[in-house]
Image 1 (cartoon, rainbow, N blue to C red):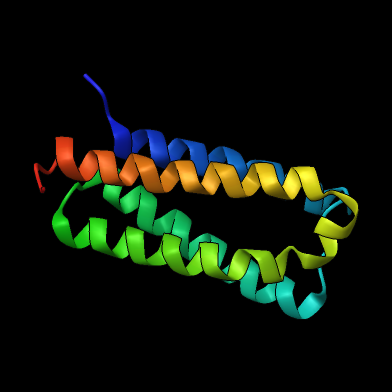
Image 2 (cartoon, rainbow, N blue to C red):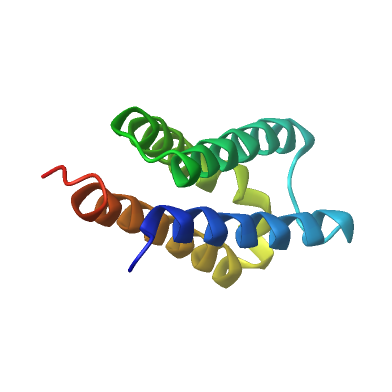
Length: 115
């Protein structure tokens, strides 16, 4: 049995751990103003994905999709400085965020049976 919402949540947690490691070791290049907004939105997205994972519902799915979309829209701005030196890494992160969107859409069809 596939669990796309749990998979999306765990994959995002792995991404957060990677970012946390880089921040701790001062390897994530980001302006302070962007860091605060990114950190806040990153945590909000994590909470939304975790809630959806634990309590699959239409409203939790909509909340998670909204948070993810907002995060993806701002991501290039937040990662602008880091991308100058590590463009491949930022592209990889963007791809991983896109995968989360696909997992949510799959879960919408399979778990919640919404077409």
